[in-house]
Image 1 (tube, helix red, strand yellow):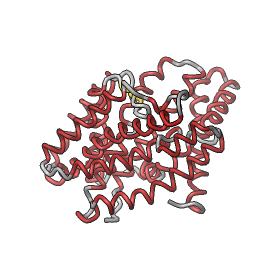
Image 2 (cartoon, helix red, strand yellow):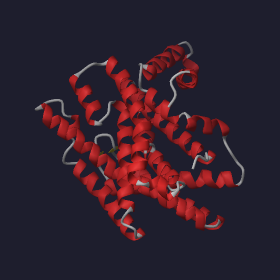
Image 3 (cartoon, one colour):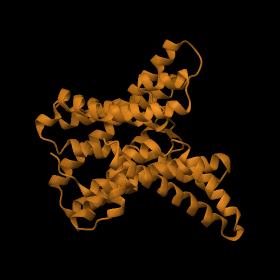
Image 4 (cartoon, rainbow, N blue to C red):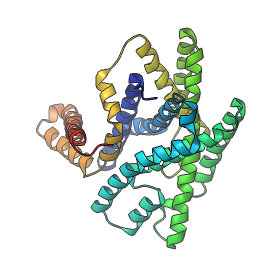
Length: 336
């Protein structure tokens, strides 16, 4: 099924904006400590990437049964995501050639934000296997158990980040962490898949109630999470994080689904969502973000009275300008 869901693009737009802002705030705070940025950085880290997995699960549910055949689906996704992963991984590698980076690429651990792509691919594949269990309650139980167990195991072993030790041990650690990420990712894919079934049966009032409950639970749990680094499986409060990420992601999908039902759309947000994969792969690459931050500080120094407004305005405008250029390059050059 090739139908495009505009509200899905809006959800992805919110998600990628959260990713960029989370990284931006963290980078600014690392060079110029701003305690007021700590809370939004932690909050963004709860749901920013989980949203993409939930959206993926929702879109999987739109396919015909034969489209969800394990081999057919995984091969198709592999062919789409692998070239993107390899191209941007090599671009990252050219900036910093090292044995560790090469190992991270080969094992699927991923350099920088590119860990997201192998995790998404394996998370979808794992959900297709869980889906074969048949009964909904059994699927939910197994899916939740896998995710919770992965979070617990992650606290004992994050060998994928180790720089020392035998090369084969580092490789095993990378693969192990990748497997743990996928075990978590399949839960979010399953949530998205279940959302489709809910929306086909629920009326407007029921959808509004569930949306409110999801947002309330997601925000409450999200604010209570202190550390949620999915990349290295460093999750301090796994149950709160899993609940908060799933609930917030589902809430966002439900909000924009309801808005589209009322013919309320946000075209600019949808455009950002359609280019979310490109933005994901590039916003930390080529020194883009450090350059934009540097421009912001230089511009703000010229006017101390409006320093904060000029700083953030310059950073955001320069980021938007660079990404717009990259989008144009993609449209008229390399396509995926």
